[in-house]
Length: 373
Image (tube, rainbow, N blue to C red):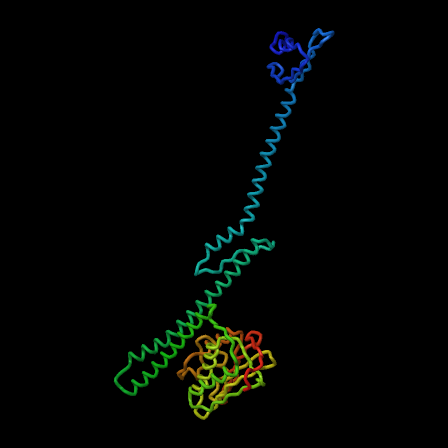
């Protein structure tokens, strides 16, 4: 400590036993921590005891530590940000692919799919869900396109036939009558096609089926009563395996009635007055319920049978006659009830159509009758 300096003079002026502690800065040595106490002997001050400590080295070390720590933290933050950016990019890649794929999808191109991940993450599940959704959409669009193509092809033919015959129509009464019959037959076929198109459009609606409880015996008897008014035939009603119990099913009464009446109407169309048409019903082993329409008419060839329930298709022998409705509507109604139709037929020996509904789907319930039949 330099004599005469300000701090030196302060230490000289210490006259009482009260520690003088301070942190001061000296230009030559830097920051100084000190304490100064007077030395008293026999009540007389003999000197001053000073303890001083320079903190410049410790401060420099602390500053170096802070600098190194800040540098390390800065580098660690940069590395963390880089790793976070890479991880985020990897995690967001499926979403970016989803957005890119969704942007590339159009009505003309529904084949785009996102590559499926196999790590079982939520993004992989999202990818699988999106691809499954696109599969359903593509199937719906393909079905719509096929339906439009088939309907357009089928409608173009009767329109061309009608137009050609009307252009050639002259004043001959017999030819006029033949042309009118032909035009009416083609218009009837066009009406059937339009009805099928409307039914196909309604099939995907959730309210396509209006379910209710149907008592089978009264249901089949009601249909038989309506069928007898279709034509003069030998009508028979046969109910089997319904012993002293009332059988109920859950289904759409109107649509099931329409499906069975369609089969009965076609049977009447392709039979003669002396032929027999049988409407029947039975329960088999508490597993399924069957309704059948059996006739002794002209029958259907083996070549035509696979096409009976195809879209807009009829057998070649039956295509020459006018008919209302088609097998498509009946098969769709039955399939909507989780059932199916079986056909057994032979030319010249008649046909048998069986509508089969599974019990677990048709919800068949056996209850004791309230009134003895």
